Length: 59
Ligand SMILES: [Zn+2]
Image (cartoon, rainbow, N blue to C red; front, side):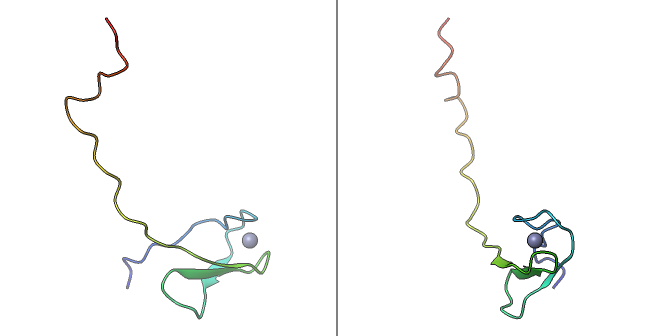
């Protein structure tokens, strides 16, 4: 339960008065601007390929 990601600020007005929305699963609502939004985990970023980061360095 506690592993669920929680936003610290409203992405629309920046207020901190956020509370879970009834939609569940990452849904939050902002009491300041009365907006409801949902966080979605898109996946992990691809790790940087080792040894292939010197493409821009022409020496
Ligand atoms: Zn807000």
